[in-house]
Amino acid sequence: MSKEINAGRAGRAGRSRRRGGPSRPADPVSQTAGRLADPVPRTAGRFLELLGAMKRYVRDEISPNSDRGMSMSDEKFRSLLGLRFLGRSQLKDLARHDGLSASAQCIMLNRLVDEGFAERTGDSRDRRNTFYELSDSGQALLSGEIARRRGIVAASLEGFSRAEVVEFARGIETVFAGLEKLTARALESGQRKYDSAPS
Figure: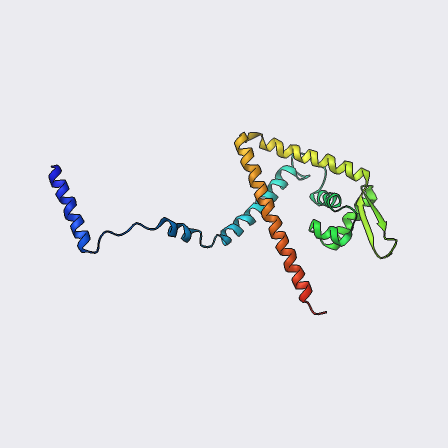
């Protein structure tokens, strides 16, 4: 029986050689290169999906209308964060940082000033310039809100294993690094457009 099997294999091998030999297996490097020829479109799509997922998480878990009972809107929270991050700044810089229109930022800053969470000061060298910065009350309010929101996220992570938390943290750092590059390129592009615009 084994002789018949070996004879059959030999016959098939001989026919393959007469037809030019067996086909070579595909090059794994070429296959990988084909799959990764252009990862940019898929990465861009996944990035947009990530933004949507983050917005949904904030809306469902952290927003004032959720069951968590948060008392501060995301716009107000971003404005307070912007004031802390930038320090004493003008409206246009804060609007650019917070992603708000100048009019929306002006309304928010006026509200924060009226509530005592921000201070408005003028420029002794140029009266046309107005600066904003966090007050002591604003610093305390922001610190409390950060702690509250951090506690919500920490509670969500309790279902993760330690290894999953470490992996998640690494992913966050990777996203941050990518965002810094994207932001830098966007700023460079905007500056080039500004420099090339007719005066």
